[in-house]
Image (tube, rainbow, N blue to C red; front, side, top):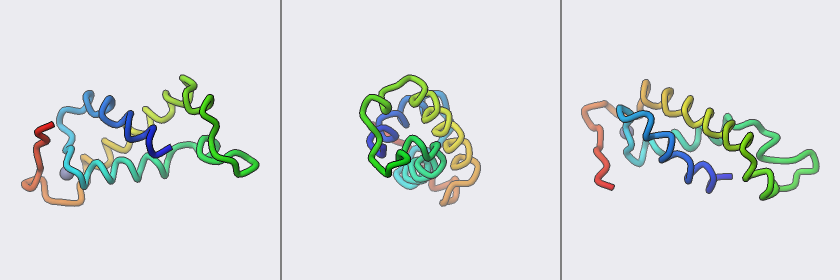
Length: 91
Ligand SMILES: [Zn+2]
């Protein structure tokens, strides 16, 4: 799950050029997303890990992408550091 979020965050960030992309904010975006992603994607009724097939479904991706966008907006509005400390990523 974490890997999926890690992989998808950069794609969503492209739509938010204003968003701070320092490690602190990325961590926050990731944590928020993992908290908010529908729980049935994280754990099945039997408590088993998510199956790979489900991970790759387009509905799953759509839901995760939506949660990432919400997380980016939330973190951008309320970063854990003053905006003057904004760190520009050098790739
Ligand atoms: Zn930041």
